[in-house]
Length: 114
Length: 113
Image 1 (cartoon, one colour):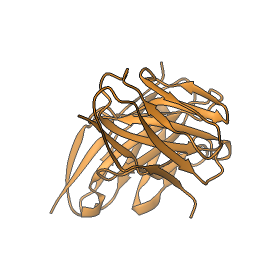
Image 2 (image 1 turned 180 degrees about the horizontal axis):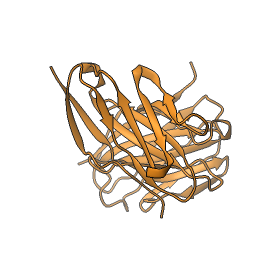
Image 3 (image 1 turned 60 degrees about the vertical axis):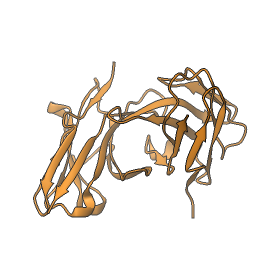
């Protein structure tokens, strides 16, 4: 069965440091890939998405992600985090089965320390 | 402004009572979804609907029911058959033109006492 893995449950990063959140999927073909962010008690906001083309995609709030087909990965990066980036981050994958369902990873909670 | 609204934000119910969560969208999206979120488990799909008057079970449909009588509305009923209904519920919508990109509402936190 298709699946999405976010291996890091919780990451702590100092403000101003770089960030990388990992996401791996299992699927035979190239899926549609997304990163969402969620603040406590809120809905999910789309950070960025990959459908095809350039494997390095830019998103909002200074985030970027790189699709690596050989590693079945879509890791999220930011060169310098801000305290406001503290939130939970979800990777999601859409498999082209004739509907628009998404499969979500279990999330990575990001804590920023001064 | 276009978007998805969910009401209420917080909901308290006694055990054994059915409760209905509202989800409305004015994005003209065809597809709508209901997710349940529990700590450490990500989002799990309850039901989804790709078109009016049609819906399909997701991964955890037991104890829930939905209807899709209008394009803009997709209410979720949590029935007394749901064994552990306390959770955060998220509604989302999408359209084929945006290929799986889903837009989310602000969520409803249901607490069963």
